[in-house]
Length: 151
Image 1 (tube, rainbow, N blue to C red):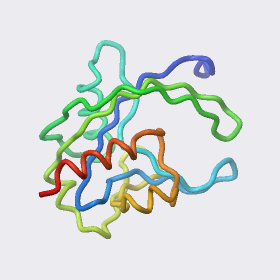
Image 2: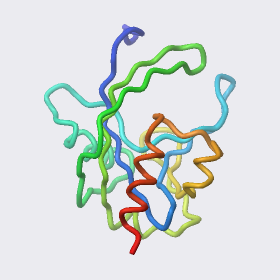
Image 3: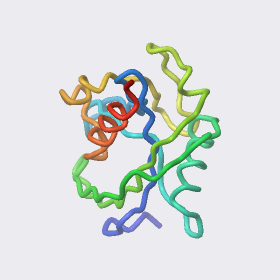
């Protein structure tokens, strides 16, 4: 049975920022949409907390354990993509992973469970919508994290 198109999906995402760059998942262009970026993470499963979900998603998608996952915000994302409507409640976390944080600025890592990759993208480029970043509001959180980590 296909998923209910009118459901509200709870997701947990992890924001990693280093040197005014954010680690994002890049979705290639298709007939339905252009190239876009998303913050790594995914759906919260029944019976798990948002923190457990973001930790699980990083293991499933990137094969890494998070050394920290601190709550940042809860936001709402109502959107249309490729003619389909979506509604998400987004649990955002500041996450840490020595493995990911040590990736070179030009590294691109294949996501294990789909056709996407993750890479570092400068915050200024994301601010210019090159590529557009989803869920909306994540860039502001990343910019705040970046400013907080500056000496």
